[in-house]
Amino acid sequence: MPVIAAVHGVAMGGGFQVMSGADIRIVHPATRLSIRETYWGLVPDMAGVALWRTLARDDVLRELTYTAREFSGADALGYGFATRLDEDPPRRRLRARARDRGPQSRCGARVEAALQSRRGRRCRCRCSAPKAPSRSR
Image (cartoon, rainbow, N blue to C red):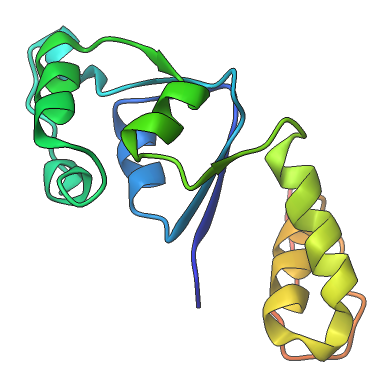
């Protein structure tokens, strides 16, 4: 199953590395991104460097890693870290796509079920998509 990262706001350090592991990375143009570990004197781990070498040019990767410089979502697209930009909040568009696909698509139903589970609702279709976990307070 493909992993889609819908990135907006801030993705620095570990968040940037998690985003990098996705198959498709949809980024809002104003998102602030950074390979931030070196700012605190740490080495980027979690296989980030191995992933980034397949996405960005080596000189760009070195500069961003050595300086911990922040860059925008628009820059991320140019560097190769983002698949595409989206002005809409990415989560809203993913939810709309899941609804468009409807219950005939197990993938679409699972995306919708995952989004609904965050609000504590159950999946509306009768597919095998995961149901919302029960929450006890």
